[in-house]
Length: 128
Image (cartoon, rainbow, N blue to C red; front, side):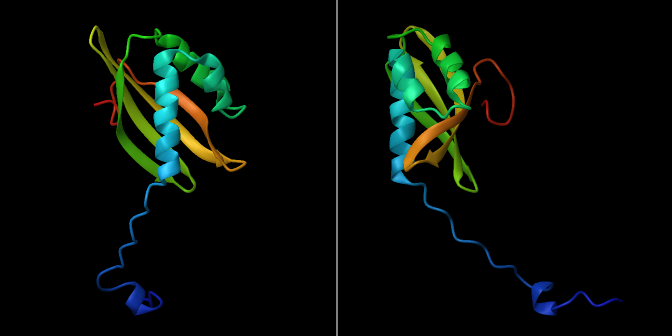
């Protein structure tokens, strides 16, 4: 059998990486974005997006009628390198829940939306 290099790296339990703490500033930015979507503030949404994510975020914001949703929740978050994916849901008394996903990353010291997608009515691992 050929050598596999350092045996300590091959055999035995592998170290588990420490969990990464979700930055409170990112959660605050996500909460603000959800509030802006629920109120229909297109100018506020444009200010929270990068140039690449502005059109996608505007399209998601245009789908929501202002004043229909009165509360929101962050369903899940995930991190890839320095960007965070947020799956969230808007709730209203007279409307079906609206589910969306967006990617946040820091740009010039502020959290901005890099991409957004409407998940309402779609099926997949993130749409439950």
